[in-house]
Image (cartoon, rainbow, N blue to C red):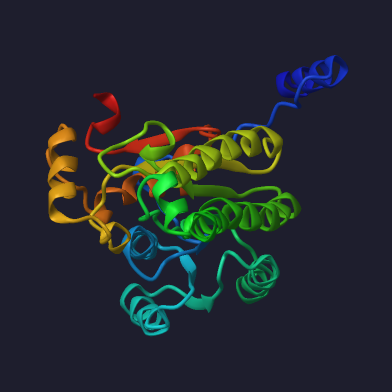
Length: 287
């Protein structure tokens, strides 16, 4: 009996997780990072991190299903990227806070593309109401808390449980979730207990799903630091100056400086990586 089959029989008898067979990997490292022949779905792809990831994945050869909520210019952008990189790209309007719409959209993507190899759960919003008690005094704490948690945590949950069923049916898949350094540390000077809690939640959700899905799917997170995107537009110049002072590299990052982490987790270069988090924060969490 082959070594793997012997180990499989032993672990089944012991009640331990069944070991998975070794993957068939490309011989060339460049090919390991290629996404040619893969279908990737990206939520929150109209700008910022999601937009940069969409461009990078198209450059790497993936066919793409890109999601937006209110920025319908993504429909035209998808056409332009498709023509530029010679891959199939289709835009879908889907608010991740709507569980029914999430299920409907993932089912449509699967029908349109035949499968989903990679899902990037990226859609998110920031908390901009300051300390929780002050937000409560202004009468917006509950509504803003609901908005942030519905998008940043529940939205990830809705996408995960639906695409997880797709991965299980296929026998493979990679879920990459955009978390944040705020899920690791309480960054300052802005106070954002809600956002921090939501991002800490998705990091632990990812680890939990990585264990649950070990037989058919990988689950990982990327934790960006301060990135120059529209989501950080709430911050005044003096706040951003403080960010820079507290970040060893002394600046915000560019969305394009994150795409390598997403490409790694989406590609065959990371077939032994699951339950992990990649922090890309200019050294903030190291301080």
